[in-house]
Image 1 (cartoon, one colour):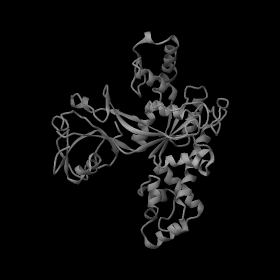
Image 2: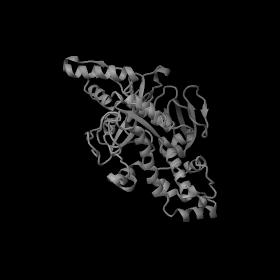
Image 3: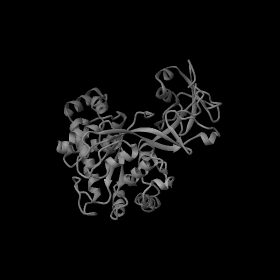
Length: 407
């Protein structure tokens, strides 16, 4: 299965925070996991899932998923993740292969910053005494590194670009278009960044260096939204640091990537019953587990699941897509009466699309030809027509009628 919509989620952080363990737990991809800096040299890519409530119980049907998975009433919608190698202070200048790593961020639409909440790794990712390092510093430095890196990219020929934008009145976003595309930043983000930075969009040539930095910093926040995965939550010094991290204004999700990886691998082998995001699990084959393995599983249940409600890994993925990227789920069908596609499969597909996506725009998500020949859509719940400019709602089930067919 491939992701249902082209949004890429970047997993970032300094070395030795459990970032690659988080990525492996989210995707069950084979990555190098070790307790030393720069274990990940080349970025890993993998498929994770956003977990949402499936609509099939509401309609009283049994679904036949094709582009996703349905488990006990939950739809797992595939998404793409990239595990970016550890970033250290000075990365924007090339320290620690920094520019190579930062270049991978340009393709990401949202970021999960994995932080060692225990404070057991220093600013460069080397092990230190638990609680000795303040993880707030990690968040602050990483944001500055990304902003500085973006500044170097966007400021090339800035004086000429700013003057031209003032003269031809086409706007600064128009003249930065090539560089914005290279950073996977939409032009619509520019004016919002200018407004939040308190600058005059019509007079970019008058901006000082400080103004320009403030503009780019806002552009980063808008175009690369970030949440914090406060990892290693089971360690004794972590909880106090979680409270400190929350003061930064980001969404903070307590997590134990190691616990999630243990549960995912045990479930994959059929040893336990567990769906990512659950707050509990059931041992299915105790006879195949050693006493030590059973004890380890029970510790996960007592020290993590009961205290935090989950391992936090699935919650981080869901939050990144459904809150940071503000996406919704939409189910396309061909037959609104039977909720089937042309092959008779019930509720076969579900797509993650940005909130505000119209029926006509959604037709293009499915197929270019369907969008080109769009007439209207039909809501499967009340059988009413949906106009081309009508925004879709989360968990909508629709049939698209074109000059050639329904979909």
